[in-house]
Structure formats: C-alpha cells, structure tokens
Amino acid sequence: MTDDLGTISLRYSLKYERTSKHPVERLWQAITTASDVSAWMGYPVTVDLRLGGEYRMDFRATGGGQMQCVICRVEPNRTFAYVHGHSYCEWSLEPAADGCRYTFVQNGLVDRGEGEEELVAGWHGFFDQFDDYLDGMPLDLPKHQATWERLKTPYRQRLEALRSASTVA
Image (cartoon, rainbow, N blue to C red; front, side):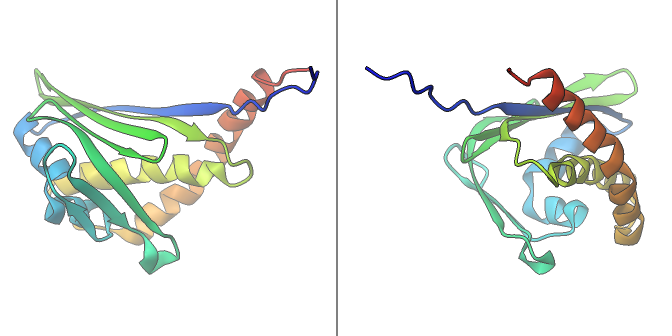
C-alpha cells in the first residue's frame, strides 16, 4: 500500500460562437473543402471528407508542425468534427434569420502553461480570417498578426484566472 497520490491532468475547452450573414451551405463548404480552408487559414490543408478521413493542417511554413486529424463526424450542413490526439474539434452550423450561426468547440486541450494564450488567440484570429474570407476579403496576414498580438494579453488573463480558480491546496 502506498500513499503516493496519482497525477491529475487538467484539460480545458475552447468555444467560439459567431453569426455570419452567409448561408449554412457556404459555411459548410468553407470548413470542409481543402482549398477554402487553406485560403482562410493561410496554411496548406488536406481534407478527405468522410468518416475516418484525414484533416491535416500544415503550419511548418511558420515554424509549427502539422496537425494531423481524423474526421469523426460528418453531418452535411450541420456538424463537422475531427480528433487530434486527445483533442476533439467540432463545428456546428445552424440557420439563422440573417444567415448562419456557427459554433466551434475544441475539447481536451492540455494547459501547457506559459504561451498557452497563443493557441487561444490564434483560434480567435482564424475565425476573424474565416469571417473576412466569407465576406470576399483577401487574406490580410499583417492585420491578423496584429489582432493575435493584441488578444494574447486578455486571453492570458483569462487562462491565469482559470488556473487560480482550479488550484488545489
């Protein structure tokens, strides 16, 4: 018998909700077609749109790695989901009076500590790029880089508040 306590890993989720003036069908195309996703993300993307298919984002051009995912849910014009390691990402689309409401959730993220706000602010920036793309605007990386830099501080503060709230004595 031992009194050594087990290791506890805290995970967190991201959730972004937005409304687009564009119809559900347009958003579906923009999140499930490789050329569309590549255009608004600004990185090469591979999409094999089927259950078990590959969804890969290649961030190597800017010093990152590849995010290789497996598609686990495809409900055309409603829900698209993929898994990456222990992380589950899901897009939900629903018609709205003035277009479409979309929600993106990523569950199972591990807090890596310092610098974690870069990931959270990065997703926020991708959604800004997504909205601009749907509106027919060209990808403006300097604009989005500035937004990313600006958002890191408030997201860092939110993460620190969550860490403080979940500290066990």
